[in-house]
Length: 489
Ligand code: ADP
Ligand code: GLC
Image: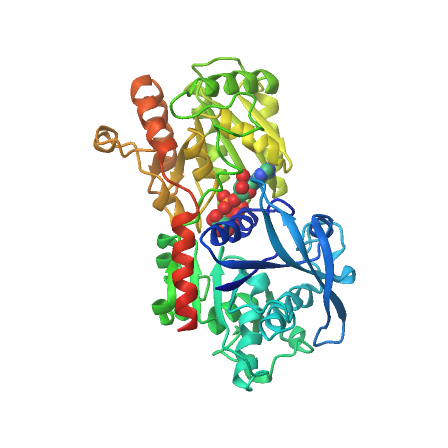
């Protein structure tokens, strides 16, 4: 099958979160399963810089008249392979400081509707044969940034399109909380008929929602874990779209994300000073000692080291970590945090590190290399998210033997087995899971982690179960292929 993946982020070239990891890994897994996959990305500077053998495919005129060049080329992937990519070269839209979505003062760019409409528009044009050398059979759009692609395809098809074969559309929700909502005035010039702005369409409380467009107009929907697929059909977690999602539950599948072994494997990870694996875990203690020393934490092998690598935002439950920090320190633990996001959280973690430098270390910023070292050194990975569509850091924690401590929600519930006595005895337990999202629920999970840490034989047993958990992309890729086939049925 010829499959076009449409995404705003792509590891290793541009990443603000897990979307990039998935957008980078899934095409490789699909290709390994024999599929003919290409990706379509906006021409952000780091994406253009990573595109080799670039050639112009076509000029594109956006519905509002702006012109862009569509390039195609190769992007080198971890593990020595590569991905064929289409990239939208439109410096006026994409060559800007800040993140892909916000300016340097963290404000969304005022023209985000057009910046990301062009992504969907280009996807639909490719589906209609813009590149005579390669025409996708399925367009797979990721998150709101690509949410207009299915709408363009649907209206094209409704008006007879430009003829040619039917194209399947698949839309994946990575996080329903980010919806790409814009004032209705932004709809002008986007090239969609007035009928699109309807409750049965992309209209959302008088606004235009790119997320709703993806959910409404795609043939098939997926999200990144089975539990989240159920949760987003409830008013509590449906972000106002639960009714639509319940109505489309027959075409919605939860497919759990996985881990790219070429990037995340403690046995081969060149970013770890001492690689290790489940049969020879000795390097892990050396990674921990080295990190403790480097960060100025007490160099104590018996102090469980809790790590957290995360966006700092309400979703991730960091207020529980802050509230529980005294207890963590009092029980002899240490915390090393790497993150960036909301200022008050950055400041609060900085203050806590300054007050107890032997026990707490805070690194504010984004640092891929340091993230690997934290999972390598950590005993416990904290992911106490309020909600979590899938979550990747708990999976990296599992793989690196840094046992996840998680709230039982979304993909966290689907990937971590709590250390109950029976699950330890049965060899199923892999981490610490709490149900009540409050200080007590979190604090009790913390105490379970300390209690297990004091039983080294059990700890090692749980750790090796965690490290052995199968997490490669093969199974997920097979499920996506099934969904693509359904989208064409
Ligand atoms: P989300 O996508 O909601 O942020 P995920 O757990 O799915 O959460 O993915 C987060 C990804 O971003 C992981 O690969 C994680 O290691 C990475 N990450 C998050 N914050 C940082 C940071 N400050 N530095 C380096 N990597 C980070
Ligand atoms: C989103 C979600 C996260 C998920 C990631 C990749 O950013 O917040 O839970 O793991 O997408 O699918």
